[in-house]
Image (cartoon, rainbow, N blue to C red; front, side, top):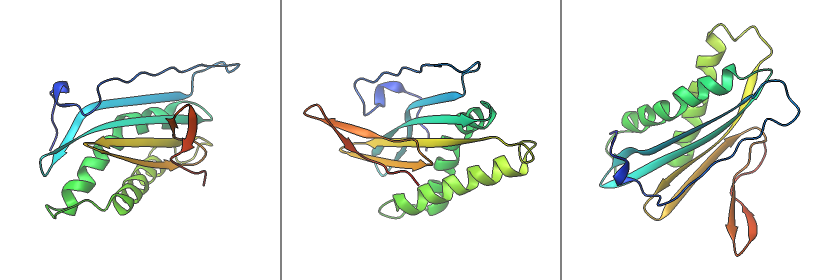
Length: 149
């Protein structure tokens, strides 16, 4: 399922910038996994941005685990013709939440928002939790790909 060869990436260019602002500690985390999986002959890249609240620990945990949980969910879904992205993303986010809540961070007032994009050949799947947002620039106009919840 995983493909370590970045040359199989679907994206030709990407970049990121994170600004700490007035905070004492950077609470954000970013994960880019080019060619993080392939299914049915289609290759996918993973992009995740996590905005920690009350510290960076949950955001860092999401950075290390969320894309792996996504692959696990897709494998569990089986080798059917397509991926039910909505259901798969929802289960993935729920599992991440369960992992954080059963760990040592459960008693603390910490958390993270998340916005992730999975980019395949000709498709972009976006999921978010909280107020982290994704937009697509079309002719210089920001088109929302996610909504706060």
